[in-house]
Amino acid sequence: MEVTGAFLRIGHKFRPGSAIVPTSITVHNTGNPRSTAANERAWLDNPRNLSSGNFASWHYVLDETSIIQAIPDFELAYHAEAGNTTSIGIEVCESGNQHVVWRRAVLFVVSLLRRHGFDAERVRTHRDWTGKDCPRLILPEWTRFMRDLRLELGEHPAFTNVRIEMSGETREFQGIMVAGRSFVPTRPLLEQLGYTVNWDENTASVKIARDAVRTSLMPELWARGN
Ligand SMILES: [Zn+2]
Image 1 (spheres, rainbow, N blue to C red):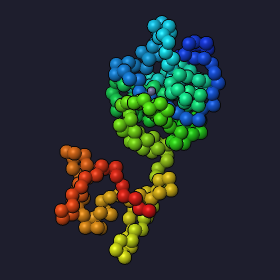
Image 2 (spheres, helix red, strand yellow):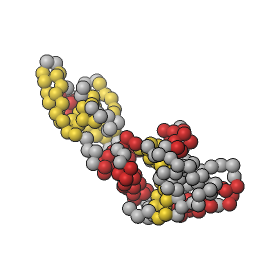
Image 3 (spheres, rainbow, N blue to C red):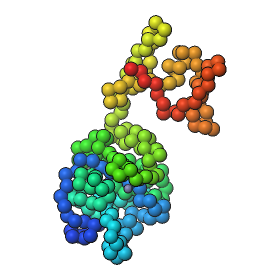
Image 4 (cartoon, helix red, strand yellow):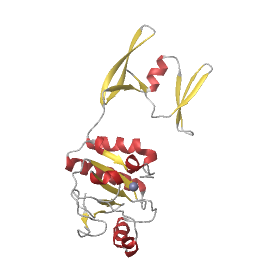
């Protein structure tokens, strides 16, 4: 993906020039539904921001058409407080087609991970560092973001057969291995146990019913196999 270098000069208020050894990548949203990558870059040179007492910068900003770098990967930027000395900050714009922006953000984070020899475990949110609600648009779907990222990175979960003994009978289910744990999907497991499992589109939830027992689970919920 093409990155436009529009570096701040060393000594610029927002580029102190301090060397860092990056060990993670931090994802942000800009917090502004209208600003583009170019607007965000202009913000760093806005005299009002230069004279304020606030320090805010980033390594990269990405929108639906462009990616701009303002600070080299191995230098400090002001984006994540305690994370500043070890993390590369990417601002994801809230303007434009967010499906496109999402996809570009996934691909760009993957390209950065590859460049630095990192796996997906190195990805952070701004919230991880400070508790701030950032990246505010991506956080509610952070699991999906990381899943997309891992798929792109080639970290597919390994399919595995999971054997579960139920009332003395051993059944085998196709599940997946994630970080040393096996998971099986709820439907075949619960159907074996005599439940009916249905997907309710209106509420985007899985409905499980058996006699008087009725409950509702989020679709992401998987039963632990072992
Ligand atoms: Zn942030």
